[in-house]
Length: 73
Image (cartoon, rainbow, N blue to C red; front, side, top):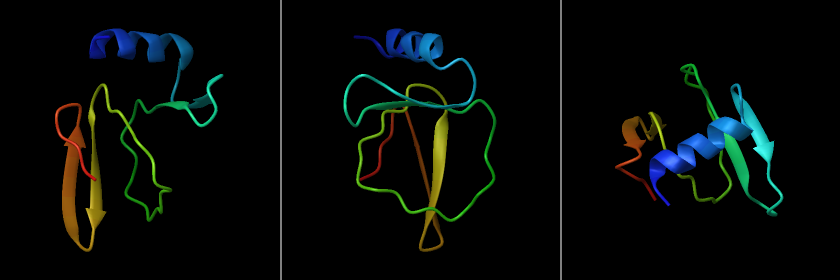
């Protein structure tokens, strides 16, 4: 399945910014349409697929960028 098709499927399920649960236990769709200010956060271990745009994480004062072509572990 192409990234563009996945993006289209997410867009049809999540109209505006937000998160929805799917029928698959533990699988959620999340969409943000505007930049979000930097805020401290602690994430549970998870797998996140970015199909459009990108994310910046700051850890130990170092900036880490990831998007549909770059990932972090």
